[in-house]
Length: 216
Image 1 (cartoon, rainbow, N blue to C red):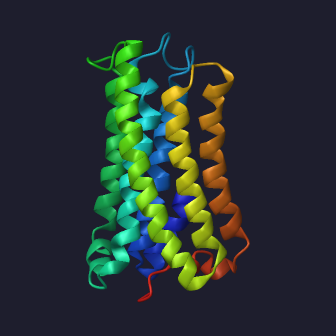
Image 2: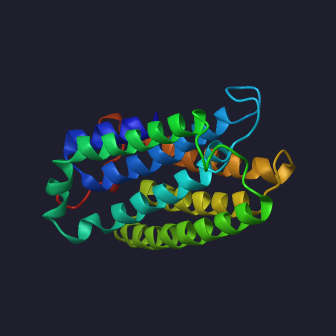
C-alpha cells in the first residue's frame, strides 16, 4: 500500500526520487511476501532455497533503488528521463518477483533444495555487506536533504533505510523459528510503518512533498 501510494504521487508529480523510493518499498515487501509463502504447509511441503533467501534478495535489490533515489536530484535532467520509463521500471520489478516465484514453485535447480548452512551463511553475509553499504550511502544522502528542509518525512526515510539495513544484519545471524528470526520481520514492519505514519500526518493532497525534488 505504501509503495502504491508513493508511486501514484510520483506519477502525478513526475518525481523520480519518489518513484525510486516506492520501488524500493515495493520490491522489499514483495520478496518478503514470497518468503512468507515458503512457510512449510502453505504452498510447499518443505522449504526450498528460492523462498528462503527471498527476503535478503529483496532487501539488497531495494538498497539499489534506495541509493539511486538519493542521487536522482544531482542532475535536473535525469528525473524527466526516468519518469518517461516508469512503466518499464515497475514492470521489470514485478516481472522479477513473478519469475522468482514461478521458478521457486516449479522446483527448478538450484533453488529446489535448501541451501547448506555454511553456504547460506556465506552468501547472506556477502549480500548483507552490499545492502548495508548501499543503505548507508542512501541514508547519508537523505540526511543532507533533511538538514536542508528540516521536515519529518526525510527523517523517516533515513530511519526506514537504517531499519532495513538492520534487518539484513538480523537475517544474516538469525536462527529460523527462534526469537532472533522474528527480529528482522519486526524491523521491516517498523521501516514501512515509520514512513507510512509520517506521511499520513501530512496534508493529504501532497503527503510526500517533503521528499520531492527541488524542480518538482
